[in-house]
Length: 69
Image 1 (tube, rainbow, N blue to C red):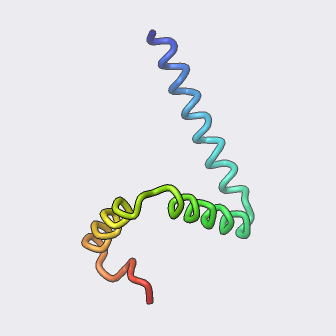
Image 2 (cartoon, rainbow, N blue to C red; image 1 turned 135 degrees about the horizontal axis):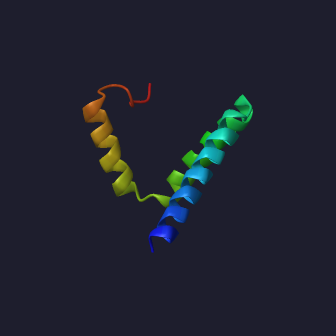
């Protein structure tokens, strides 16, 4: 059992390292597109009530930082 969990741990670490490598080798346009995809994914898949909870907590921690001008 221990051997399988170690293999899974190394697999996850390897995938994370590959993701970091790919991100740092992206152009600025690709990074911007990735951020837009992430925002679209959150808007379509996260319930509004959950977004409100996190927005309220973020505003309490960092006042004025997340308000739209």
